[in-house]
Amino acid sequence: MKIELAKHSGFCFGVKRAMKMADDALQNKGNEKVYSLGPIIHNSQVVKRLKGAGLDVIDSLDSIKSGKVLIRCHGVNPKLLNGSMNKKFKIIDATCPFVRNSHRIAESLNKDGYVLMIVGDKDHPEIKSTMGFFDGDVIVIRDEKDAMGIKLKGKRAGVIAQTTQSKENYSDVLCELMKKDLLEIRIYNTICPDAVRRQGSCREVAGRNDLMLIVGGRNSANTRRLFEICKEMGVLSYHVEDASQIDPAWFKSKCKVGIISGASTPDWVVDDVIKKLKNIDISRTGV
Image 1 (cartoon, rainbow, N blue to C red):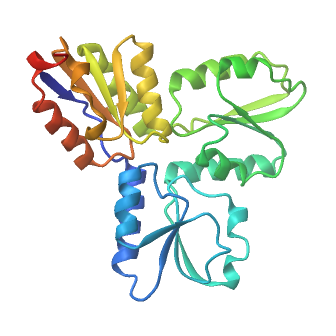
Image 2: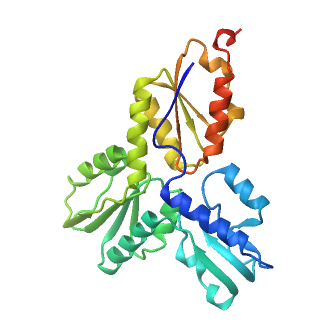
């Protein structure tokens, strides 16, 4: 079996930054408790490791009175922090800088009286955090079909994308929005450069292999997008969270296997996947 690991795999810049902030907070906690407001990243193995080191995940600040609180990589709705100044804890903002840029754009559009349109998944924590920085009307658009039903005649609108969106989907949505009878439209490129590079790398590796393994959390938007790209290319693909989910029967007659991981997948998880693949005897699969 020939195994190819995509060049752009492992933690992205924003996740590396958040992980360093979490590790620093835990190493210097003293007698203080350390919390994260929601899972700091979308990877269950990492969240479990951090919990073992003393990081407790909470849904709100109501249940705590002191300690250090990490803001997750996806950011949080600022309304969740209301009243935090009256409590004895320190806020450590691990929001990805690219997500924070979307927050600033939302604030600016809000100030200027625009309708905010976000291309992405309405249930994703990043979208929810960005919506919290906007007081007016927010429209979340999933895809081109979604955009077709939008009516904004005579409105002024600003458009941003979830940072893990694909350029292709964003472009398709924008083309549809340009057909609307808008008074004015402001378009911002808020897609993370790492997401663009990773998706490009995914296409390259998928094009050279018989089967693709996409490694990452089930709740990771960028990992799911990599899986979708492979399926769209017609390549046999499997999304796994770790090596334990790999079925040797998948590799019967498949000699070339490509691997790519999501932006919140640690290297050691990918290493375990590669190790398992190397121990699979193709001649015995399916027997």
